[in-house]
Length: 292
Ligand code: AMP
View 1: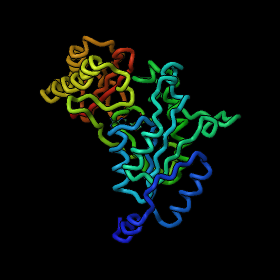
View 2: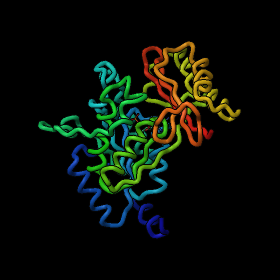
View 3: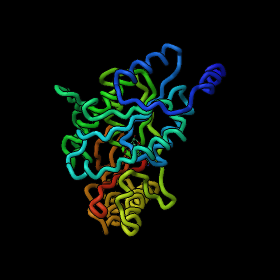
View 4: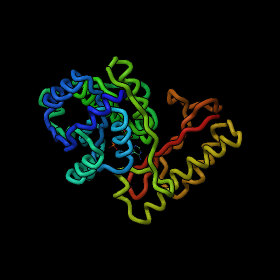
């Protein structure tokens, strides 16, 4: 960013402008771009925590206008109870947004995002049916559809996504590339508690004891990456090292994939270790990178 631009953004009004209309957000951001301001966008489902704040901070440091969206997307929930119990502390979220110096908070209703007659569905083939997609059919179609719509509303921007949702990040990247959307997708590192637990809006549904049990997800990833660092290249051996740490929870998958999310038996180059498990009926996911 040039010094001039920095000065311009420093004099920018800092109160969060809350908008529920897609059209208004489109108009506001078009004007910003016409004044050569770079737009940074952080899409979320709210219940903001330090992980979300890290994305907002990154956007704030790299862009002139920071847009946050808060939308609990019904299309990505298979289980109606999961959707109904998803936390929605909107006032608290707007406080977080204000502290993060967000300029525009886009908080659309379901009917604003999916008006009567909305029949479009965006689907990224193959990548959407494995790992999370196997247990949550249709989940990533919902993610890709809402991401396509939000990115169309926001327009040309840098958009910040957490590595915490690695498969989602890969799918959004692919969708943006396939559709030539004018968006730079930027992956940001996972923010963790000091004991390794990845921050998640779902963690508030865990009891104190469940929270302690939940640290086994990150411990299993560290066990797997330590095995790789020790020279193990047989994926099944690494997987067993991960599963041993997960013996107290109901594991959905513990998997090692390459950059295209493909599972291979012999590990080579950059890989990602991913795990999903239920703790006290709360679905938790986590992942780390390693080089084999
Ligand atoms: P969500 O509100 O859960 O849909 O998440 C919104 C964005 O925040 C996504 O890009 C997530 O990957 C990201 N995110 C969620 N948790 C974390 C975390 N612990 N560290 C970094 N990013 C995160």
